[in-house]
Image 1 (spheres, rainbow, N blue to C red):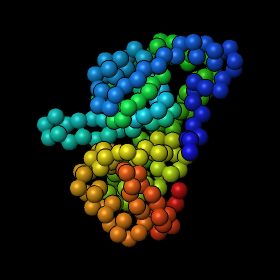
Image 2: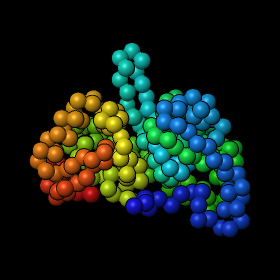
Image 3: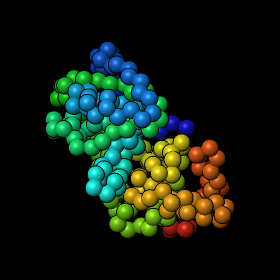
Image 4: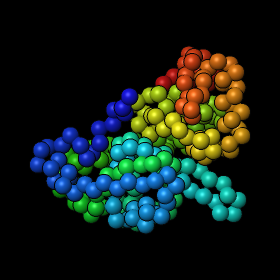
Length: 223
């Protein structure tokens, strides 16, 4: 199943689409790569064609990590740098083999300035990113870790939630914990309890929902 996201870089008027396609370059990265993205995010804009890349903050004193985004199919980064031209103080890591489409950042800025069709779609995408961050902050403040995990599992199957759709497959428990702002053993304990209650099953790092209604009732949450 594919996300319903309508990317700013696609489905545009023919001449504009051709201009964008001519600027596109493909880059393939291996799991664990970090240096390439860190060195180039001020020069290029990236769209994930397939694979997963995470952006995160790291406290060097205590080693605590908080994942901000897991970019998967059709996600764009780094939109902050596109808008303000300043270096974005985040870390990047490729968490599975990934293919990216990249565009020169100045080219994208010119598109925003010169083509309303593109800018309208781009700013709509930015708005969705802002809503995702707002929801993440609210979840950390108002929900328990077990509730946040259940919510994340449900949204992983919801195509219109573009930043949480289909991101859990293949993710380690550590990566899931970093996304939720907790630690691995807490995630593992909650997953065991959900399996014991026959709400989910996990096969080859892929979560299967066995009883969606029971999951939703557990947190009184409707998607």
